[in-house]
Length: 160
Image (cartoon, rainbow, N blue to C red; front, side, top):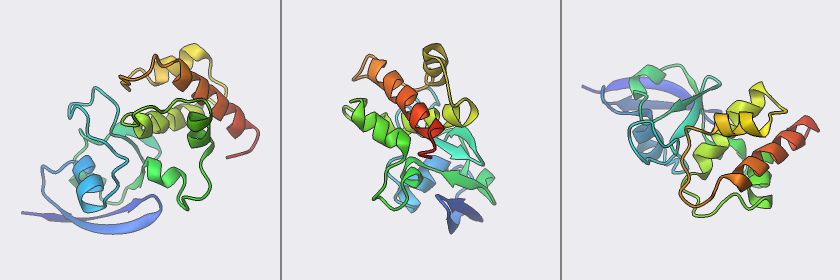
């Protein structure tokens, strides 16, 4: 039997009927059409499905949607809600060439946001640790690390 939940996603309120075993990932992708949230492994190992729930990074593939009633969800789409002005993290990923196939990008950006909100001046080691749960098969992570460092600098300068 479906259960009705109310949640806020990227600042917009939603009321959704969900199955008890439906994941947050399924609701975001299939019900709300937020396809930046990827489903990579389905077991919380790749980070492609990373979103923020009440300001905390979580694997949406492991999170039951019924547990999200009353929660605030932020996806990569919510980083630049107008679509006209990119978030400093998104700008840095583009500027530093940290995007290749794009599959891991949104989850990587959400992990970067999680880090930079807590530590706006991370070391390379801290950045690598923060994204250690995110897999990228296209890069050697160097450009991603550079992008996160550059985004931190932009954010410290008050760009966001």
